[in-house]
Image (cartoon, rainbow, N blue to C red; front, side, top):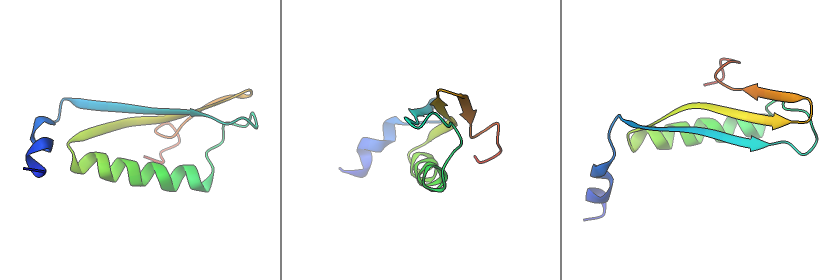
Length: 70
């Protein structure tokens, strides 16, 4: 029964991750990159596509997809 709960997910499920950096610098940290890769891998197993991870700071924003990190 546990695995059947995930049968509802298909390729039409999408996600964009967003978080802020209180320091103001939107540059992805090593921890941001590693955690994003773990989330993308886990989401993929559930049939969920992660299209981007955006980091917002006082100095603008960064897109991990735009930086070719995902």
